[in-house]
Length: 184
Ligand SMILES: CC(C)(COP(=O)(O)OP(=O)(O)OC[C@H]1O[C@@H](n2cnc3c(N)ncnc32)[C@H](O)[C@@H]1OP(=O)(O)O)[C@@H](O)C(=O)NCCC(=O)NCCS
Image (cartoon, rainbow, N blue to C red; front, side, top):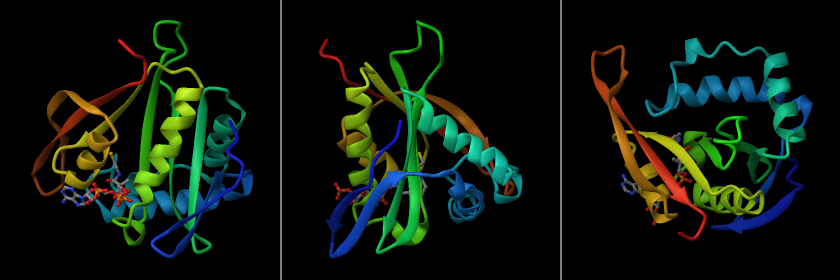
């Protein structure tokens, strides 16, 4: 699904939200390597990011063409700041009502409301697509992300203890959260 360019103002900064194009593949690989090194709260270490530019271009194409997925890029004062996305949890009829959500911003663009703006817009699209719930996983200790998700209505529904083992020998849980979109 394509998000046509949208413009916002946030704390005096110009924000553009829009879908990626195939030419953004290399930029997204480089971004992944950087953000994975800036925080311990993403999926892996930077040296484990092994996507090629072509694979990332396929990822963009798949999200743009699907009716039940979207990749949203954010630009702050013309600079790429990060992205958020959703896809259906699975293709089966039993899982098609569930959207899986992810978000990561460059460190320098965190903490001024961009994550809230992007997720609010993404959830709006997820609802319009007819999904009944949005789901995500947050690493224990990621207080900023946890607070943001909770304030948007996500509720903690389970934990995998010590799901993440770091090179320094420490561990962190995975916390699963769900946002119900359908009235009970
Ligand atoms: C997590 C992330 C997407 C949040 O986006 P963001 O733009 O930084 O967040 P926002 O500024 O919109 O909102 C953060 C909220 O957390 C609050 N917050 C900040 N630090 C906090 C802390 N240590 N404890 C609790 N709340 C905190 C802020 O006050 C704000 O809440 P408010 O709007 O009620 O005042 C972004 O920080 C990010 O990409 N981080 C690195 C990658 C990552 O962790 N991704 C998420 C993986 S699940």
